[in-house]
Image (cartoon, rainbow, N blue to C red):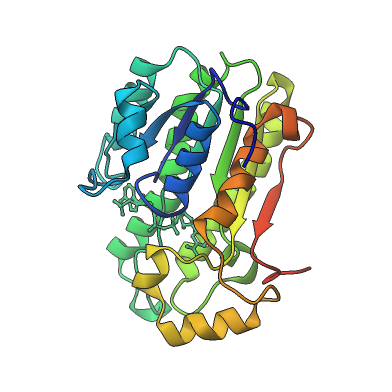
Length: 256
Ligand SMILES: NC(=O)c1ccc[n+]([C@@H]2O[C@H](COP(=O)([O-])OP(=O)(O)OC[C@H]3O[C@@H](n4cnc5c(N)ncnc54)[C@H](OP(=O)(O)O)[C@@H]3O)[C@@H](O)[C@H]2O)c1
């Protein structure tokens, strides 16, 4: 747990914050004093945690639902951010998912476009539209969620998803160089196999157990394991000389 005032007075946006890794990232930013626009995913979950409702009632959290597969959804989220904040300190582009496992020869055009739109294009669109607000912050930072699969290629049926994560990693490195003269840092967190709803949908228990056995630290990761890496990379005080990097959070699953 970082100092409770680490992000006091700072404005943060977290996409895909309705559950999983993004929810824990939003929680930890709120715990450290930030105001957070939390993109809750496609629909507002009915059973959202109390801390979000409390922070909303205190005017520190602003919840927004948006399906990034629908035209104009990123613009709608950006409008909400602009209506809440005059400047932006931290943008976390985290929303994303595998969508499904698609053998290469059977992948349809629609499935291909869906995976790209969600995991790749929405990150570019969100970054582009938030840059004017980020430029107004004193030490702005962008933190993008990528994946161990960007390095390894992922497992069967995840080729396009894995490639979108490699795109975001490379895009982030290029942006880091481009935006460094303005003092905007851009980094990525790359989770390994993290026990969230993600794997409930896309991996069997047997596959997860085999993965667990291959991880040097002997267990799957949790959202709790990942969130501090986002706060570290977002904080000028903690990582002000780090940009263009990918921080792997995977229990040693990938060591190279
Ligand atoms: N879990 C892992 O092992 C792992 C490993 C590497 C990378 N990652 C990445 O980490 C990020 C978070 O994943 P997670 O494990 O926390 O999974 P998760 O629990 O499934 O959360 C994914 C988030 O993305 C949102 N999302 C999905 N489809 C969307 C859409 N069409 N429009 C807008 N938002 C959408 C989800 O909202 P809904 O509630 O609407 O679905 C949810 O908030 C993702 O980018 C994922 O690719 C995860």
